Each structure stands twice: as structure tokens, then as C-alpha cells.
Length: 406
Image (tube, rainbow, N blue to C red; front, side, top):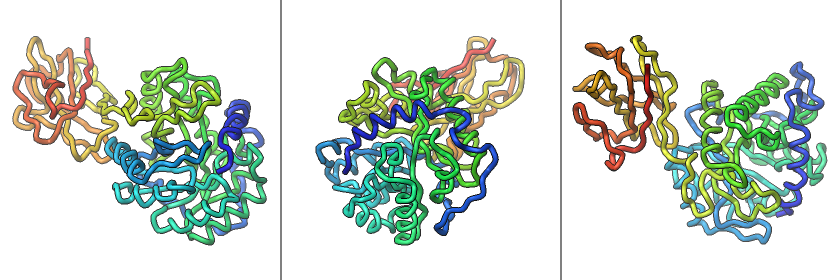
């Protein structure tokens, strides 16, 4: 594998300089596509109930060609699957990395985009082609144009060659500000990296809004599907797990209403070998030992809390847990008494496949005057107790949130 370290030293500078809402070199009118290859439809991002994550393994250091065991890869993927990721994007296909698609399918992942880091590596190429029955698409290179690994013509030839060899969709990745008309004409879908951090934005709300703006601007320049390959926020070197978590939750608020998947979470695990910038080891949902960060913990959030005195439904969503394996238990405080909702004999709410839920909290008496609302993720066999709030110490109670109304 060619030196990733040298590439990232360059790409951090290039990405920071080129990220802007106008997209350097891009017309605001959608260009006519003239890809010389026969494009293959990209359908594996159509299901917006599927969450995708970028995956580089634990116990991995490409700088010294140290690769994880297959069992270690399996343990990684089980951790990701258990917090409801069902699609993964990989970066390389050398060493044991080429086994990731097969192991991912065995764990239960629904979709895999396999990466080839070095376009000149016969090992990576052959491994990737051999994995075609386990793979939905390929990403050939990662910001390699920016670091000068190859030119546009060479990349286009390789994309067409891989498409012909596998009959699967193929694309490449550059920083989002690099997408001019030539690059937009390349590949079967558009797969840019897009990091608010490298644009100098770390406040969660502003960073999420900036990410959405970049996505919308690029989407307006092409008829192809646009998926942001990397969107993330580090949790160290001056930032915190809370900032990282809040960024993703705000981004979900803005972008998960799209009909299709629009971004891939970056990234699965902290990578301590990345030492060229203070924040680089700390982008993971988990640390290098697979210990969860705040961003990967099960969470319940309110999407809409009806104003006091009204009869609208309570709306929310869950993250990092499988919807079909859980229910919602909601209590409202009326006067000094807690009441189960929607009904005492029907106290649990089902969660939709897209992780959202709706509960009627005004089903009797003066429910509309409730001053506090508590909601809990619980197991389906949990039995709520009248007038008594669930305890987080109970193994059947996973997480909770609360809202106060005045």
C-alpha cells in the first residue's frame, strides 16, 4: 500500500483550501454526462433505513503493513452491526482487508462498497475482483488525484476496466471542493469527502448546516447520485465526545428526511497510527480498543414535543439500536402523577424501520396540561408500572430522554 501518511498531509491542505459552497470549477448548471464507460445503475443507496459507516479495522497500521486477523475484523464488524449499521465502505483490499466483504456479509451487513487504495497494486486489484459476489460497488482511490498518484485519464481507464471486470458500479473519491466537470463525469456515482472540521467549523449546528449546504450545492451540478463518502467530527485534540455526538445528531435532523441515503458516517474506530495532525487519531465512533464513545451509545431523541395545552402527538427517533428489537415507553407528568402513554393497557409504542416513532400523549383527562414528558427505549418484554418511572438500572431499559413544558 502506498504511503497514506504523505497523501493525507497533502489532502488536509487541499481539502481545507478548496471546500467552498461554489465548488471550484463547477458550473451551477448540471452538465451533460459523457463518461466513456457504460454506467451501471446505483441502487444500493436507495434504502434510507440503512445506515452506512466508513470502516478501517482496529489492530491495523498500513504504514508498517500490519494487518488485523480475520477474527479481529469479525469482532469489529459485530460491534458496528449491533449499533444498527448495515452498510460499510472500505478503503483497501490488500492483506486481510480483502476479506472484509465476506465477513461483513456473514455478520449480517446488507451492503458493501469495497475500496482499492493503490491503483497499481496487482494484489488489491485481484482481491477486489475476486470479491465481486460479496460487493455492491467499488471506490477506486481516495483523493489520489490530489496527491498526484495518478491523473484523470489513468483513473478513468481503471474505473472502466474494473466496471467491465465485475459488472458492478465504480466511482472514486476526492475532497468535495475538487469536483469540477471532468471529475463529475467520472464513475457511476459521486462520492466526495466532506468535513466541516477542515473548513474551520466545529460548532455542531453550524457544521451540520455547512455539510448540508455542500451536499445541496454539489447535487445541483450533476444528474448522478451524490453520496457524501466521509462526514465526521473528531472527538479529541481540543474537541469532545459531546461535540462529535451533537454534530451527527444535528446532521441527522437535517439530512435523514431524504428519500435516499445521503452520507456515510466517518469513521468506525479511532486510528492511532494517524499522527500527522493532532485530531487524526480521534474520528472513530469507538476508540482503538472498541470502547464506545458517546456518539455510538443507544439514544432516544424527540423530533417534536407538542406545546402544552395542545393535542398533537409526540414524535421521536432512536439511534444506535435496532428498531425491531425495542419499544418506546412514555410517561407524562400531570399535576404530581406520572401516567403511561398512550394507554395503561397499551403502554408501549412500536418503532418504525426508519427508527422513528409517534405516541399519542393526550388520550384522557387533562393530559394536554402535562408539564414533563419522559420517554425510554425498552425491550419488547418490558412491563411498565403504573405511576412509576422506569429505572435505567433495569437491564430492559436502554436509554431515556425528557422534555419540560411550561
